[in-house]
Length: 126
Image 1 (cartoon, rainbow, N blue to C red):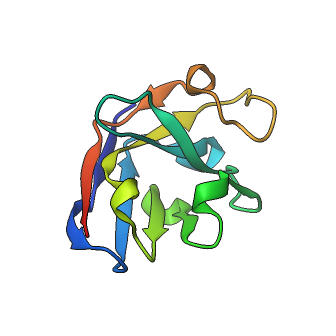
Image 2: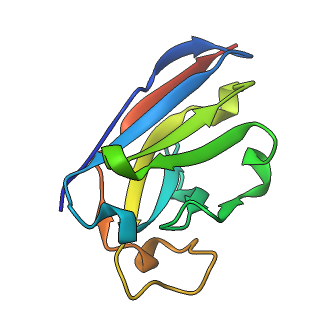
């Protein structure tokens, strides 16, 4: 299973970016998906997760109201729409997949995910 994340870039504070993660797996629609990020010198941290059906989502506090996770199972793609970006959102963003049987919802731990993408850099300037 391969995950390819893209869509990062350099933006000014207050602007938006949409990250995409394409998964090379026919059973993608059965995978719970998550987004994490890692800033320089910091540990990787959870951002958001979405159930395999798309029917449930979960966000860490700093993402609530600004970020939206979604998925298109027909395209094997999960998205992270990020609005009102702040300099402290600067990080490498990673997508991750949890295959069945799934962990207990919400799936926030790094070790609960089975597959990881390579990351995409997001830089927010002030």
